[in-house]
Amino acid sequence: MALRRTSSSNSESNPEIASRNRKVSFPLAALFQSVVQDGDPEEIMKILKHKDYSPSCGGAAINVNETNHVGLTPLHHCVLNNNMDSVKIMLNHGATVNSRDINGFSPLHTASAAGFVQVASMLICFGADVFERTNDGDLPIDLAKDAATSQLFNAVMIEQLHRKLMFSGLTKYYSLEAFSFIKQTVSYIIRLLMRTWIYFNAKLQQWLSRETIINCDDYKSNINLPQKPFVSHSIKEDETNESPTKNGSVS
Image (cartoon, rainbow, N blue to C red):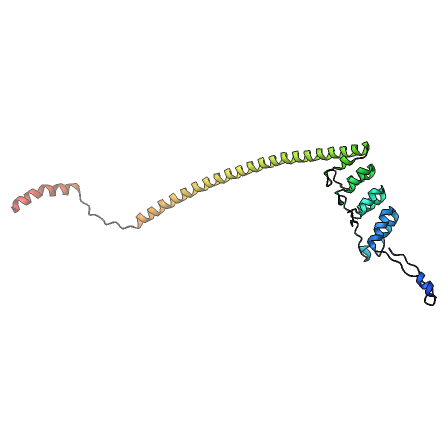
């Protein structure tokens, strides 16, 4: 946001007045950080909605997650100010709820250490991780300043653990049910395929045997076997009886 002063008509003729009417501007990041540290929600909204700083109006977007030299984000500063309105504005404009500073402190760790129960509750509603640890391995509940903050984290952690256990139990149960259903379905399909194969195999064998018989009959009917002369038994007996006499007469 820039501080502007309108120049008068005689500013060019009077150098002293011209010097007083200069436009004074500040870097966007410095101005935004200053307003956030002051904890004024109205000024924060003015900057976020100003045409010079609004992307919808063609301005440069403000990085609401920009960190300072120790890794603190504007959300950290709003939490330190215990300003619910500023925290809500930051979260609704894209601030990362689980951002961490150089020591691994998230805004939830900061709220817990400061004993700001309402701010911590709002951060949890926006998805803050109650199981996130700092660089020293501390949970937000480990840094709780008073009993009310500890009770809040205790209730939320128990609820999330129950939800995870219930989800894992339901997942395991339905996984077993799905595996059993798939197993039964595959077994039924295999049995159906086996029965189908046996049926069609029997039909194929029956068809092949019938075709073989038909082909054999056609083959026999098409073969012209040599016809043997018909000789009766009486003629054969006469020939056998006459054969010795013929032999004797010849001799």
